[in-house]
Image (cartoon, rainbow, N blue to C red; front, top):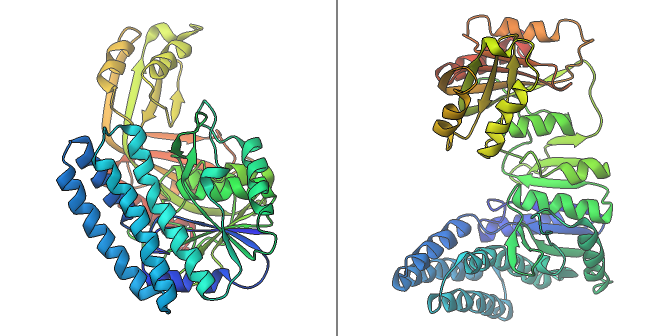
Length: 439
């Protein structure tokens, strides 16, 4: 059984829903994970904002506007009067429920319930349309099997057991439709998976049922070897190792969240990135296989701050590094890159919320220098140290770009360069020319 996930753009209109329905019908049994229709979650966030501000009139105005939009979708999606009536009833039920929150106290708990309605509506509409088309489909509620533990991490044992129970309820079903992103927490309250959203749901489901493949359908033809918005002559990458994909996702490739494919990686289930706008394109296959001897792609991460701590006391002083990193831990600030010398250490962070306090604490141990508006350029591929000349190629491409830090050897898949944000576009183009275009 395969698991297929479709994002908000893929189900963003009646026409798009019809096209997704064609993609998912036929062949082996599948579990299909759907996001909310594009734009819906933003509207639900706006509704919640009005309710926090105790402005029910403002909330109702947005609710009415969103409901009218969905009625139009229903009118365009269904072909028979019977199913149009069913569609209107679906919309009325969910929007009456959303309106019920305009009368009572509104907290973060109610907000999570409101935000969950987008996925519930899109899946209900899709299931109804499939049944109108004569497809044996079944709606399995994610809130019945997707749960996080007290640490807000997915509970794989619970997910596997409860999901299997849901599947057994519909032995004749060819397709199972469920919601991405939403779940219940350890206390039974409606919550969400946060990192990775619907992609994470698909990966968790795939691992739970030992799926043959997990497909992530978006409006992009897989991962590209560089940012096509900036760089000329980019191309889709057809095969990636899970570690390569995670590096690219972490360092700026927006098509995938870095943590969402971990369940698939550990269960050794391949993940394929496909394009709903071009369904015959091969996309990108992510697995535990490495293509030897290849540099695959380049990505960039902006809004980076570099901090250098220089101290003659560091020389041969055990415990210095621990003290430095305890400061970042106490301020709940993650470190991306690290470079050390005998008398100093340089680190980068992407969250400067507690920067002033971090600097004050670091000054107890040495002289502190801060560089803001920086950017990390990440080169990803088979970068085992035995591969002669690979790191030299990347460094040579950067010969005209001022480089503040270089990180190499922390993983077998990554070389990272810290540069100024204003040099990002030139660096990405230079790397593409040298590594991929033979210039």
